[in-house]
Length: 118
Image (cartoon, rainbow, N blue to C red; front, top):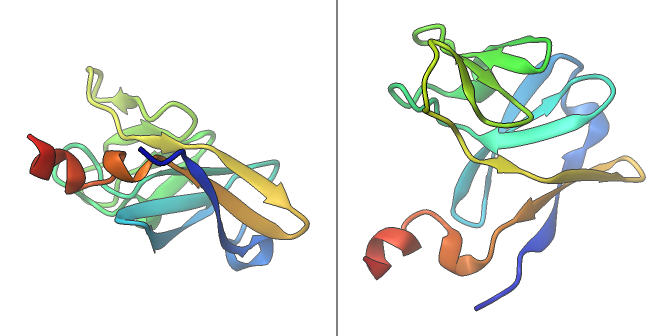
């Protein structure tokens, strides 16, 4: 099994403050958000009906899904509204110079691999 790896995603100025951008990396569709003081990354799929979270409205440390207004915490992936156990996967981020880096899980944990292994 391969260890998780850090991937260069984009420059910090490519993601405007209080907005998100969709990126595809290693089998994942991610949403990268610039909160001003930090960048966060989550799976770019609302757990309700798969809405593109990168296109949502950022409110504090959460994003509101553009399809049905589900509110998802960007730091934990938990759905705040409506309440419940639904969540999206989060990914560690860091900044190196002016580059946003995202830590992807081991290859065995990528979408599709889990279904093929089952």
